[in-house]
Amino acid sequence: MNMNWKGLFSTLLFTASLAAMIFSGYDFCGYLSEEARSDSLRDELAALHSETLSQDAEYAGDERCIQENAAFSQSGNGVEHASDAPEANTDCNAEALPENTSSSALPSTESRGIAALNARNRDCIGWITIDGTAIDYPIMHRPSQKDYYLYRDFNGRKSYNGTLYASEICDPETSDNVILYGHNMRSGKMFAGLTKYKEKSFYEAHRYIIFETLDGVHIYEIMFALTTPVYTGNDFEYYSFADAADAQAFDAYLSACASRALYDTGVTAAYGDHLLTLCTCEYSQDNGRMLVVAKRIDA
Image 1 (spheres, rainbow, N blue to C red):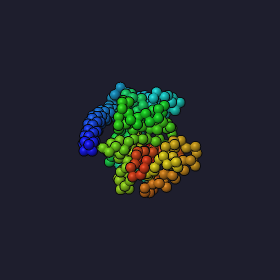
Image 2: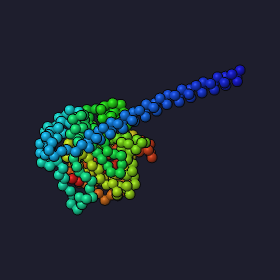
Image 3: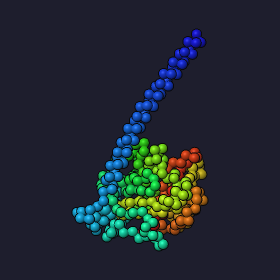
Image 4: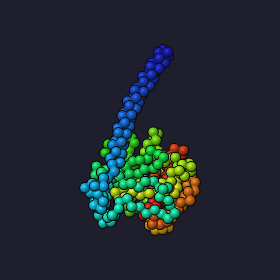
């Protein structure tokens, strides 16, 4: 009798295991299918972004700059910021380099197809690129819905990869600090490349971030690379810092970053500088986060 029960138990256990394997298989196949769809969309968006503008295009030169600035003032979930619209620039690609910086040391600032991406989805506010990583993606912003793109692709469809996006507390045009989020994918996609900045040697070879928006191509120099836990009850609340009340608040954020930094870059910032804080998951600690903080160095 005991042997029968043992045999029945073994049969049930085998059946349950087989069912779990089949279920996992279907889920895995679904994941692979979604990854293929995600890669295809990424290639499509990259091709659209990479379309350089013809000098004899209908809206070339000054006219295009004005149109892009107007479009940018209405980007992001249809929210208008007409009063904050940047003034028209007669040269979209003109960038003033900081003193003592060789232009040959900086990445290319060729303007590409953000206007086309924004026309396809008004939540698209820019494109971020970091040399030496797979980070070469559009940036989304939907301030009315927190973490909307955490598990959605550019078109709003379900996606394990999600899409890189700016925090809902930020105004990408005016905030002192724009916080960007993205998954740390095992495949190396999205913001997984940020973890390379744990090594100072990687930082030294890849010091700059290119963030292209409708008002131009901007260069950011990395200041800090750090890790920090969240949900501790005593967090470093990097996720709450978008607009500094004053110089003291701005300096406090920099000091908090510096005290947690993995190494000293020697790069500093002052109240009035524009910052980017890039964030992804980090797995050396419970609920860890990897942060890369940079300051804008073009005019």
